[in-house]
Length: 144
Image (cartoon, rainbow, N blue to C red; front, side, top):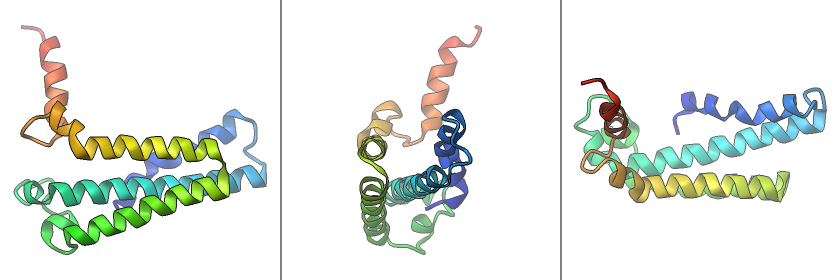
């Protein structure tokens, strides 16, 4: 689930500052719950992506140490954990926070699904790596 990546989810706390509610206990609680929901959802996305890319990850020195690629977690186990995590995230957002948060999180999950199930392979054919897309975008702008 790559907890070291969860730092990206701290964006939910920015709203507290911009709304002038950084000292409001209920707002802090809801932001913390939103943070947890986004961590669950992003963890689900990583699990799904790792399960789908395990074969290729095994031959890539940068990704070969991921649990599915190295065989510590089965692809089916990763997929099951992804479903549980994403479902929990959506339930938390909808039942504990509010419908706009649920909609935002559902959009995030949809984007992650579209990435894992095709967009990355359309943008980066044959590689499965966003690095190829970055190089493709940068290279046409490089001075000749």
